[in-house]
Structure formats: structure tokens, C-alpha cells
Figure 1 (cartoon, helix red, strand yellow):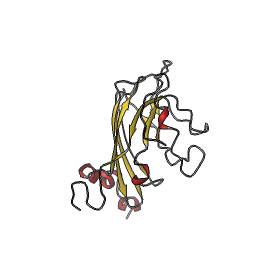
Figure 2 (figure 1 turned 135 degrees about the horizontal axis):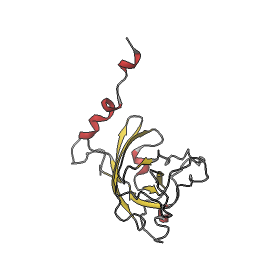
Figure 3 (figure 1 turned 45 degrees about the horizontal axis):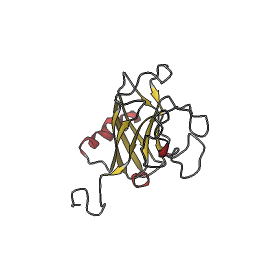
Figure 4 (figure 1 turned 90 degrees about the vertical axis):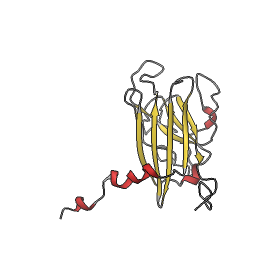
Length: 182
């Protein structure tokens, strides 16, 4: 028997999440550089990490300087503050990448794979063992203008911030569950 045939596919591993209540979510909203951008990010706590599902529409196909871009930096930032602030440099109130263990980039706990946009639409599913859902409640997701280069310190040179969404719990009490039952 081929050893690969006994390994589950990613569809088999993650398809059950379509019917499950996520443990947290963020509604991504574009700022002045991407006013049509909207997204939904769902976080599911697993026994040894977090499964993140991301759906985004309205991503600009060009940077503010006119360069075509398909990949976008995508990170969890320190603060759950999505105040636009300066329209030319929005969402700086979200702070830098969430980095509780003071690691160099790209090893921050908040460093996630880049988002690939096709004609302004992106979907991504990713697993990380870098944190638990409870660790990121009240922080924010930021979608950046350009791809993360995974080298430049401190944050990968991924450009301006296009969108922001605060991470919120869907389970007010883990002891009672989402609808008051466990």
C-alpha cells in the first residue's frame, strides 16, 4: 500500500469547518486606498493551533503608484484599532505586527502567508501553530498594498495598509457556548 493513500487530503481535514461555528472572526474593511474592499476572516481553534479562512473582495489590482500587484502582505497587528487616521497612510493605530516573543520578521506570531488576489478577489485557508485564538482576540488583521518580501526588517516592506479588521470572539463564554449551551 502506498503511504500517501492513507494520508487525508486537505479537503478531508478542513471540510467539516463549513458547518462549524468559528471561535473568532474579523470583518475586513478597506480604507481610503481601497474603499470597495470587504472581507471576512474566520478563526477556528484546533487542539494544536488555529485554522484561518479568509474571503476578500474589492482588492485593488494596482498599487497607489500604478504597479500591478497580485500578492499582498497579510498580518495580525498589535492593536484592535482600525481608525483610519491619516488617509495617505491609514490604519497606523493598529500598530506593528503582533510579535509577543520579539522575533525577527518573518517569524512574528502575526506573520501569515501572503494573500493572492485574482481580479480583486482572494480566498485563503491556512493553519498556524504560532498562537491560539484567545491570544489574538482584540488584535487586528491588516491587508497590505504589496507582497511581503520576508526579509526587510521590521515588517517585510509590504507597503501601505489597504484594510483593517478587529478580531472578535464568537463565543462570549467558553463554558456556556455560543448560544448558552455546551
